Length: 311
Ligand SMILES: [Zn+2]
Image 1 (cartoon, rainbow, N blue to C red):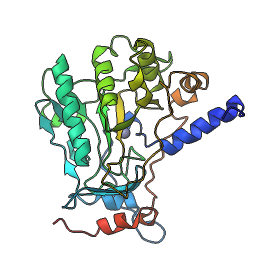
Image 2 (spheres, rainbow, N blue to C red):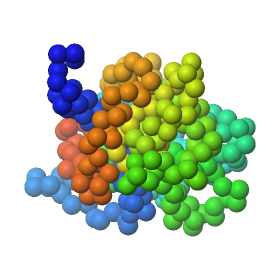
Image 3 (cartoon, rainbow, N blue to C red):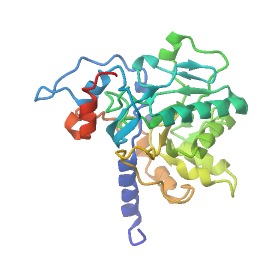
């Protein structure tokens, strides 16, 4: 890497990030209207996303992950309960609160820890569909039950009634024109959520808006910065963090990612986001859902998974 010019190096970093991504779509799409009817491609086959979204139940049996975060699926997924003392799931009607048991265990532990810290608990966003697979909106990843969106607004004192869970939109933590976090919103609770999540052993990386990463870099003392390595800057992610678990050791068909680069990630790579700020302009990098992804693009196990009745 040392022989590369800075633009070339930044381009490489961008490519690596794109490959690693799995990021979520714009937050404004969270309350998107119901999906349109399934539309076949030119061969008459519905996109893989529509086929996975149409299956309301998981398969039974031991959990197994097949493929990668952006081309995969999961057998034996479990559903995160919607309403518990330490968390509530937003938009439960989307039926995207399914995941590997390790992901559900992570959420439970994080929520309990945040409640013990005095912040009541968590608001949870999308995990995965019952059998994983591509989603018709909002995400390129979230396909193998190892990704979770968690809002940076903690569980409020009053609990949300079911209709509110479908409509509530947590606030952004970031002043994008100024490229900073909002001081009255991004405080100790948000740092606690991010730090505790990053310190969980199963977690491999966490995507947040670059100003959030920068705020963490500034606020973290020397000698206690190891957890910052997992916090990865990416566009979007101003009101939630996207947590990704590493492949479970007993899922041999789970395709892993490269681990994050060494170090706290507060240096040149982070600063590059503040030099080219085109990512902050709404519409400059429109989200492109991969609804056209065909079933054949996924591992064969995923194609079979769609045909299995619930046991
Ligand atoms: Zn996400």
